[in-house]
Image 1 (spheres, rainbow, N blue to C red):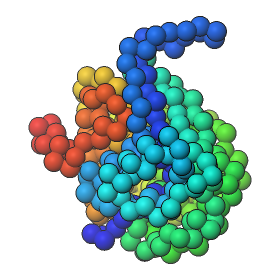
Image 2: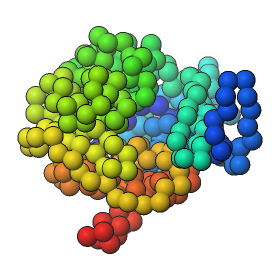
Image 3: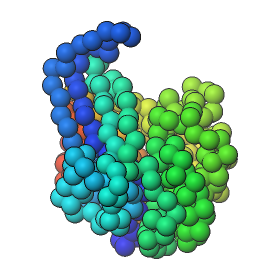
Image 4: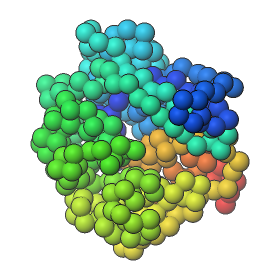
Length: 311
């Protein structure tokens, strides 16, 4: 599987990240102790995958303007292959991310050009049988993207794998659209909150069983449980199985899920078994939360050294 690439159809936007003591009550205010403005959104997954040695093709849309400039520069500097020329008619969107003293994250997002990915744009993307196509719930929540992606996914080579991360917007996605994309999904990765919203149960093992019947036969479902690690079912893992996380001192959880997803898909693209890939992803997330900022995914060498040190 050395020729595998990640085809990323999600959104790269600008993150305005502010560190605060706590989220103020409605009508209140607070002073941020620090703030950063950087490329974010799906950019964090892209960086994580590339740093772990798998090439990425960015198939998403982006704009022109001050935020679009940040996105364009980040994509250029990352070395990913960019398919779209970008839109001249509007700017890229941005997200205000509030990180409180407990490292919990709260988001507010303004949509821009990334929400205008139509079928004509997607048809520019050449997908091979060895590729893994990454779909984000953020994209499915945009009317234009949501209308274009299902049909395009259904026409991909049968051997190409689709990975779906439903995102925190999972409860707001159109049920018929979500069901249609699930039917073409080979790898489903979501966090515990999202799994509970999708299935109505807080038990990760039960969530896995319920979700496994919704994706392609033989597919893989992962439920991420933060510092506790993750749970897996499918693709040779015959029973819900917990893969333990690593105990570290977290300073910023922003981007940890993206680091986990990016490294997990990179390991699968290289042909690693799901349990080993999940343990590697847990290590990547543990390293990411020890740094401030969204795009803090470690390199392959850093992950290898961490896993060796932890036995």
